[in-house]
Length: 143
Image 1 (cartoon, rainbow, N blue to C red):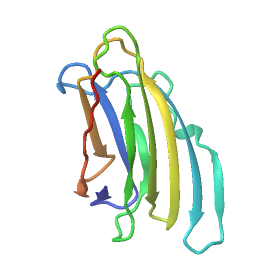
Image 2: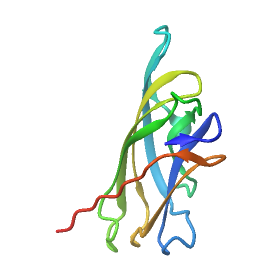
Image 3: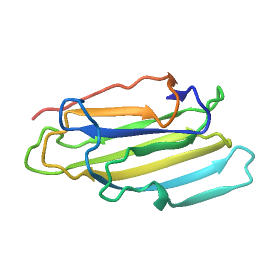
Image 4: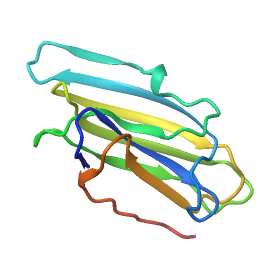
């Protein structure tokens, strides 16, 4: 994903009504591993400010994303058993980005939608502005 606007967040939220609205209650946890382009700073840690606790907000996938040509975000997002009407729906994501401050950041996110309704829509968007370029591919398995 490449944003049109600098210093934005690529994020997601789920729907239980075929995309009429997005705001399913979720809980999540997130940690980052960072290394700056100048090779002068590193970080590994839990980022509590990007967690959600029984929230209907959008979940961050790539925070502080830059819009320069060498700044972008990519990764994988898994949603488990979204059609279940018995259990909550767990998710996890592993993302990598170059942010607006020239750090390469690897992010790990896990959580769950706290709903027994089927998750029948996912909205991916930037926190501000548009997606300048990017591809989202969907793969599924059935049993």
